[in-house]
Every structure is written in C-alpha cells, then in structure tokens.
Length: 306
Length: 306
Image (cartoon, rainbow over all chains, first blue to last red):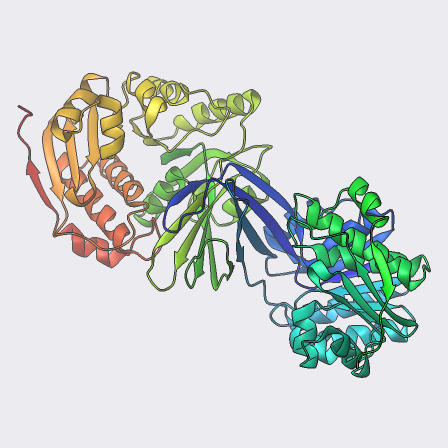
C-alpha cells in the first residue's frame, strides 16, 4: 500500500453565496464538506487511480469525526487528538466563481500525541511501498518533524516523497528524501533562486534525490538522478488550481510504485494536475478528462543550467 | 421548569480575522463555538438567572453533537435528526469589530421526525411552568407548526410565548398565544402598520393576548390585558444587538413564572436586553451590568393609539 501522512488534516467546507459583501448577512445556498489537508487529497486521488492507500496523521473532535465519516476508499489509520481538527471554509460567489478562504489555525498537538503518532507511523512503514509527507505542521509538532519521518522511512527502505514548505522543508531536505515537490514559491524560498533550473539543481545539492517543481501553467520540471525533464500541459487551463499540486503528488507516487520510467511518471502527474484544475471541486478529478489529457502532455528533456 | 423550543438549532461559530477582504485568503486568529438558535439563547439566559430550564427542538450530525456537548446548565431534551444541525459563522474584523454573517440553511426534517418531536413536546408540557417557541422553522416542518404547538400548550394550561416571524407567526397568532415578542419589522409585516402603538393593538386583535414589541434603542412596548407600558433603557448603547431579543424573552418568561407585575417583568426584560448588547459575545450577558441597568430602566404607562 501507499501511505500518506497529513499532520494538519482539515474539514474542508465550501459555501455558495450570491456575492460575499463584508459586514452583511448571507444565506448560504449550498454546503459541501470533504476531508481536507494535502495528504488526504493525495490519498483520495490515489484511491481513484485504483491504489491501496492508508491515511495517517491526526484527527480530533466533532470535525475530526466528520472527516473520518467522509474518508471513503482509503484505510483510516489516523491518530486521535484531544483537540479538534481545524475547518477551512471556502466561500464561493455564485456570480463570478471567485473564492474567499477562511482557515482555522488547527489544534495543539501534545508531546504524548506526537510520540503516539511516531510509533504508529513506524509500524505502518513495514507494509508501505511508498510514503508521502504532506502539508503544514500543526501547533505543537516540532519543526524538525518531517526530517525525522524522512529518516524513519529511509531506514525502513520505503521511498519517501515530501511536499511542504518553509523551515520544515529546509530541515527535512537535509535528511535526504527521495522526492520533494515544491511549487515555484516554495522552491525559491528553499534555495534563494527564482530561476527554476538553477533552483532544482540547488535543492538536489541540499539533499533531495529528486526535485519535481510544479510551475502552474508551465507544468512540471523534474531533476532526477537519471536526467531532467519538463512535462507541459496543452495550453493554459481555466479552473480551480487548489489541489492541483496534490494531484501531481498522487501521479508521481502512483508511477513510482508501478515502476514507470520518469517521463511516464511525469506525464501522469501533469495530466492528473491538469484534470484537477478542470474539475469543479478543488482536488477532485474527472477520469475521462485525465485519460484525454494524458495523451496531450508533452514531456521533453531539459538541458543543464548555465 | 421553563421549556424552550428551538426547531432550527445551530452551532454558532465566531471567527476573528484582521479584515475580511472578498476573494482573499484569511488566517482565523480565534475560533469560538457555542449552541445557537433563538430558543437555546433564551435557555442559557434563563439558566444564568437561576431557573430550571429544559431545551427541546431538533439536533443532528457532528454539528449537533457539538451543540449538545456545549449545552451546560440546561436539561437536554433535544430530539435527534438524521440531517446535520446547521452552522452559522460570524466573521468579526479585528480592526473595526464589524461582523460578516454566513448562515447555513439547516437540515430537512422528515414527517416521522416532526411526529416524534410533537409527541416528546406534549410529554414535556406536563411539567412545564411556561414554554417559549423561538426562531425560524427548518425545511420540512409545516408552516402551521407553531399554531399547533401553541394550541397544545394552551390545552395543557401552560403559558406560551412565541418569538418568530412571517407566515409561521401569522398562523400561530390566530391560535391565541399568551405573549408574542416581535421586533419592529416582524410587527409591521404581521399587521401592515409601521406605527408600533397601532400595530401592537392590531396584533392583539389578531389573537395574541399580550404583545411585547422590541424596538431596539427605543426599548420595549407592551400591550397587555392589564394595560400598556413602555420600558426604556438609559440612552443609546454601543455593542452587538444580536441576541438582545432573546435576552428580552428570557426576562419576560422569568418574570412570568415568578408572578411579577407587568412593569417589573418589562424592566427585567429591558435590562437583560441592554446587558446583552454590552456583552462581547452575542446573546450572553454580564450579571453585574444587568443588575446595574435594572435600576436605570424607566417603565411608564402608554396612552391608547389615536
């Protein structure tokens, strides 16, 4: 199975209103709830691709129960927390489709809860073919958390993909993860370079075996031990980019466990990412759109940075 | 005990953000949750005044569990629902204190659930000294619902106060409730008159034994079988008027079960209402502010409408 880790899970709530006006009262016409947090999005996409997936991380309170109840197609190995899972609220304007986002901070994780998670994680690694560590750290989890989880995965011989940002990313890269998947901003913050070819090279020097940068409309740029490639979608896409990075992570992991060559993994990741942008709900994708896009992704080798 | 009925309960959530800007992403700095819906606000205020209170109505889902967990000091006789209790979200700007409100529509009540509620309500009336019917009707509950609940209370000899609006109010007034407590808009909608003295008289002609109109800064105007009075707070109040009407309802019921004369009931209701405006959280009140305001409410007889 593939293991996904979401330390800061969320109950993602989407509201439709006519138009959001500050300091007015609004009748919500439609309410949608789904499990959220990057790793749970990855888990759902992997399950939709037909993979066996186990999701771990933290979950607590009434919102945590709502997350668990909606986590279908995925083995639930989430670790209970005394605090309540955070909510995120996306308020979508009916007229324009524009979205206003409200994100709760998330519950405090105690040292005992963090220890319980680490023990459970190490047990789950024994039957994992690959592991994805995704998203931000909740309050109370040490900033070096991902570095420790990367080391544990490597000690267990399980390939590990990391998708986070800031100081947790910087520390974990030094622990030599197999793959990191930063976006343009996260890559620039890590390396100090806004030039993606140069920055992916620098991120590898810092410890990552492979760097797959997700560059929005410019597709994916991969720097691997076997070479460099760019995977480009067919023209600009209109839609909701939220969750496109998570779909790309699912594509990379799926290709990894199936032993696909890098160009095929990248085509899959780019097609899933594009299909997720086209889907009405953030982080979902339409199977037919994915299959259709898969044939239209161009993957080409990239030269070295000057 | 005093029975309060809240057919459309809510989990009231308050978010603090710096400034709400449409189509931007916001970090919520503080999350507050409390049981909501007019009848639950009334129940909390009555409990704070030292009364025995039983709360009934509908509750369901993870949000319903969160409501029940937070319902302290009140006997919980809420009837379970397959659907989930709605949320209301108040987004408060840190800089100005201005509030943006998002209200979910509420779950559908099935005919079987509505029957189960009616049976439970009739059982609870046997030990009730007074009953308050408060707030809007959730989808699925018939528009004549409050009329039936008023008739059942009167048949059981229990004084009944009604605080609702629109067609449910119009129908229930004809069933001759002991007290209705409309605000200025609700009273105008019921009677077609924007002149409160004339409108309270008209509402009595339609069936209400007593009409207590809550007129914001102008205080309360009561038309009872024993006379007319106006209860006025000491000058304009700055604060959050949400829940001020519910505090007034609690004051009226509290005075009723204690057998206070009308002027004292009105002073209590007006003081609680004013104390609730001054409190930082909607629908709560500070006991000292209430006691202090109680001495500063002026209650005076009102002449008949021309």
